Image (cartoon, rainbow, N blue to C red; front, side):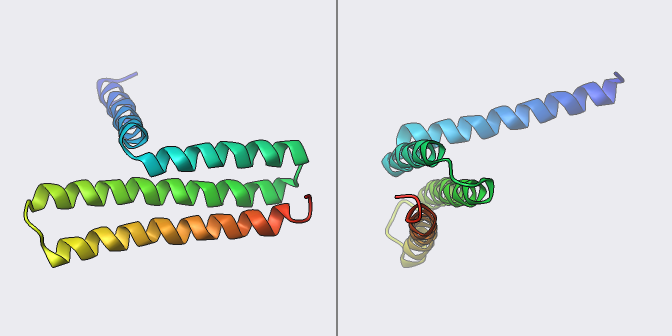
Length: 122
């Protein structure tokens, strides 16, 4: 391994470490993220128990991932806005509300996908 490959490998490993720290922060500080995780675990367990098809399982996993992604982005937006302004700012409120709205849309989508897939099995 050359010196530049070694540096690249270390940077890649560091970037994964930072990403995992971000996920860990979100799980430790965001009640809704923990709630999403518990619900996701239950849904995945039900899907495994019911032996849904691979394609259906992929759709469930994508829906769950979308909720997690939106929750992570929402947390990042909230923290960035809180850092940028300490006073009430209507534009800051819009940024936070829109990010929270993305989580809501993803969660509604996830519920709809779950209902549409699992209703055949239950």
